[in-house]
Image: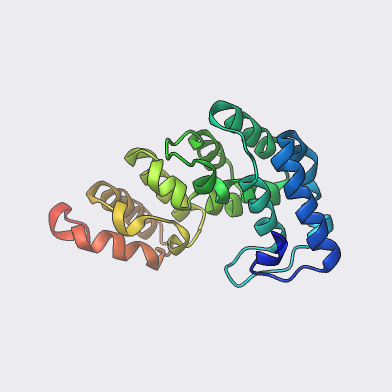
Length: 205
């Protein structure tokens, strides 16, 4: 069975053949991903998938998984794909980080940090997936959550909140809520579940 036949979405025979060829090329000569990665959308399309991804993003994840590089060489190659990619390519890289960092070292955190300094909500959402939840230090994770609130990104899209929400994050969100109330502005409803468990310990209302 071809690799493309295992995908959870339909590809035309031509697209499937292209993807199989691309995967084989990357496995043999990893640097070919530099030209194949940007070409995915043109060959495979960008139809939406039930899991929230698009066809091109899912196919790009497969190309990344086909890389046989390791350690810093892998980091350098993936970083270059992210740096020179368009937003769709960058989202694919960010969402593939858990699969790329096979030994769980957090070696790709700089890509997450760089994204969080930007203002593209779709990229921020992609950056705050399971990889960031597993590896971002506590203070950076809290600041990322607060940035999502400022940017009106639903907190349901931030991975790890059930495990990583703590008293300090509740305090920061409570302060934000009071500032919004004082300014006569609405407070996002999704911060309440993160604040309420700590109300009695830090006096939030």
